[in-house]
Image 1: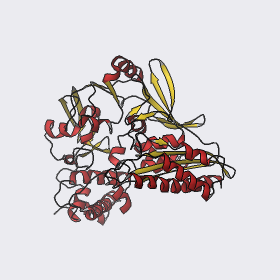
Image 2: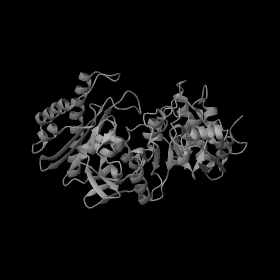
Image 3: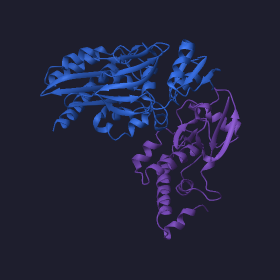
Image 4: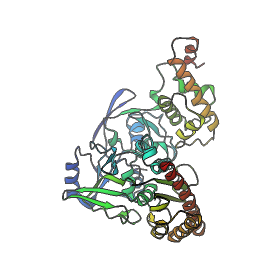
Length: 170
Length: 291
């Protein structure tokens, strides 16, 4: 079956069997391996991608189900050479150890901030409740999302000193 | 893991979907959000020849009040219930329950109607439907059928839905007087299936209980309607004595099994405690409505 979707803003298509999972289409057919396979049973969230803006588990979706949709993966998060606020947050707050859960955590964080610009600890914890960090670095993940929320708010604020913070990185 | 091969169709209209289903019947499986079906396909517990994806059918995701009932379209996702501002006061038990369902990512795809039709005895919505006296609207080429939730669940993953029928809507009757509900769930970790969960709904008339609904999750081959406990409440003032007796009767109706989540005796006692707690919350909510 033919499927096509916009992945990180670029039109992608393939000819696949209906049983191909979205995560396999992304990793195998499109060769984008930033989306991870962890549990493969809809428990861990390592395969998180955004479909039409909503975080979903790509191991529990058929690629044919998202035909015609807008998909965002971790590869689509950086803004050119500059890190996105969520990436700066994880960098500054040591939001990762092994990094396996990080693509999912970052996409969740970014979507949460787009919906709730200044999320509380509790809101962040509920938002990542479908994503497991087996290094158990949750405290810093929560801090990383908060850091990113501040950067995002500063970047949106009328030009001021704080806007420079959004660059981040080294 | 990947599913066994199947044919896939994503009809654009309900008429097309019903025609296809009539033709293929038992060989076909209806998919809405796929959050229960896809894991079953991957584990190869389900190997349908054809998956009919109804996810693209138009105008089936509404949540609205109509002629004395709340109508929830078959494609309304858990997240649509979670973020619906009216439901928080119209039917708070739905909002109680939705937070317990899996995790936010699954709630972004999965649907209430899909979950009810999946009929997992550990499913949360089934008990809520039993407590609220909800009905399912099923369409087929021969017409429309209204199926009460009470009696819909026949066994694990088995319902009275016919092979040519698609559930298009769930109807929840709106209470006639002050009403309240609550859903309490015991789970080992966030997003897990219930060890035990209990849905409770009460409607008051003056100082007496006019209507009561109690649904039990994960303590039998289906979601269970605790009919004897409901009867012990109706027509009575909700004194401690009455509530304690209803909780005892609900625990009696539970048929749990020993498993990794707990022993049968433990689960029965959790049913009792959660009926007590649920009734106290539900009655508190009903009295707030009155004030």
